[in-house]
Length: 492
View 1 (cartoon, rainbow, N blue to C red):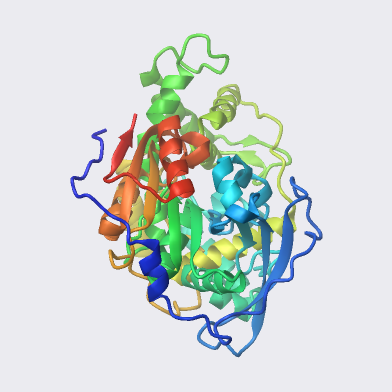
View 2 (view 1 turned 180 degrees about the vertical axis):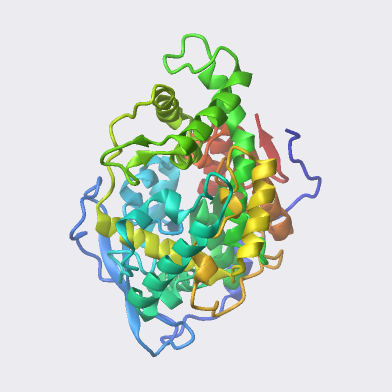
């Protein structure tokens, strides 16, 4: 793939000038100080992590109306005398939490970043232990292959539309008023309330996956409240489609990534080898999926309780997120070829699944209006199946948003180049969940505000995970010093 290089030299706005431009923090603008204490009801890896609760308006348009709580965590800067500020860890999802990240992934950060920054995590609105939301979905609808629905083996979406109506109706019945107020813009406004409660004029952030869109929206709504912003594994900010564009991108993400899996699965000496040649792995997968469409294998304890073609396809999509998951996909393919199944995967508690599903659905459906026409989905699915057989039309299919009963409360935030130049994007070339093409769209939208590091690596989550030493070094240097590359770079 051609390296991304731009010739425009980008310079950051001096921090002192930004601080001078900031309005004063009035008593009305500052929430009550956070009361830090032990993290109750959760096991954390690092005893230094402490927790607090922040009250925010359920409806930011009605700040004096009903309030909800946000669970917040931190590990203070390890060298208080050198402290610069706070680094907010923004999880992916939607439906992900960074509450335990200060004592988890945050400890992978370089020492000079941990010395100078409080590491801050939080559970977004609706996600326990913040004020929770729940749709009361049927257990079968909690399967990933239902939440991100796959068409029937013949390409029909009749069943998907019926499922969308059933699930959306459940959310309307059980979600309460809060489910109408869960969106990316709401989360960005919550973050600014958190910034103020921390006593920070500006805040740094490391957002991953969906968290990159949260970070971009925050930087758009509150441009002079940002310090050092890292967006890692970047979502397409397309204001017309938003989340629909992210799901549709899976078809290209699989095409970008599957050849890497095929090369691994055909390597001599690999105990999980599936074929002698990389070129044989794709047709093998397609044959197995088609056979399982016709002849599912019972799978007691799984959800659903059968290994069918779409479960195999969903496993493929999940496994391509990291080379470390390749053996799981290879093992399932070997079992399918023999008409058997491995032990059923251990599912999280249903209460947790219900909560995460509700927050994810509300965010996806409230951010942007989705088509409601079955004919529209039939057309899109047919086109996708013809062009991208590995994903069988799922990325353009009707999920419960096709029947969502609540219209969006505001238009999607349009990401632009207006604001300080303090954003660093880091993106793997081969990423099944957030493909490079979407990251390029974000880079174009941000213009002079951003620099992009493209990493010659495979997997989702680039920085300190599935990237490479070159990319990690560039990002770490920026977080520690505020110095970005003068232009976009390619890390081979």
